[in-house]
Length: 258
Ligand SMILES: [Zn+2]
Ligand SMILES: [Zn+2]
Image (cartoon, protein in one colour):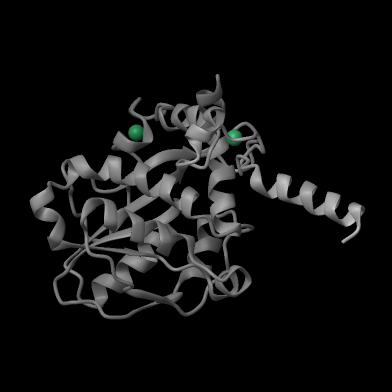
C-alpha cells in the first residue's frame, strides 16, 4: 500500500470517526452522543417547543385551540383531543424543528427518531396513566409509496416503535398507503384534501380498539382526518391524533417571532 493511499485512508477514518450534529454539522461532544444532536440544536429545539400559541398562550404540547376537525372521533385524553410537541414553521431558516424533521425523512437515523420518540413520550405519559396504556394501540400514517421507495424506510414507523417501547403501548401497522404523493409542494387545504382522499386503507383493525395515530407533522390536518376516518370506518372505537409538530398558522409567524 503506498503512503499516499494509507494517508488517504487515515484521513477518511478520521472524518468517519468524528460524529457531527446532523442538523448543523458541529462536532458532537462525547456526552451528547445519546441524543445525536449538539447542545446548541437541543437548546433551540426546546426553545421552539416553548413558543406560546397566539390563541391561548400555551406551548404546542398544551394548546387547546385550533383543533377543529382534527379528531375524527372527538376522543379526550386528559383534557386534550390532539397532541403536538412543537410548532412547525416551514422554510424559516432560523427554526431547527424543520431541519430535524427533514433529516429524519431523508436518511434513516435511530438517534434522531429516538429524540422525537422521547419528546412525544414525555408529553403523552401524563395524559395516559400506566394502567390504561395496554388498552391503546400506537399506529402511524405511512409515508407515500414514492417516498418509501426513494428512502427505503418510514420515519413514522420507527418513531412509533420507539414510543411504544418507552411507554409500554402496543404498536401495530393499521394503515396501508394506496395513493397520495408526499405533500411538500401542496399549499392549500383543498389541494391536500384532494391528494390524500382515498390514500389509505385499513389493515388489521380490531373492532372497537383505541388508536393513537401518529404523523410527524400536522399541516392542514387533511392526512390525520383521512387516516382517522379510514380507521373509524374499519371499526376503531377511538382515534387520538398525535404529531411531533403542528404547522403554525401564517398569521402567527410574525407575532411569535417578535
Ligand atoms: Zn447542531
Ligand atoms: Zn392555543
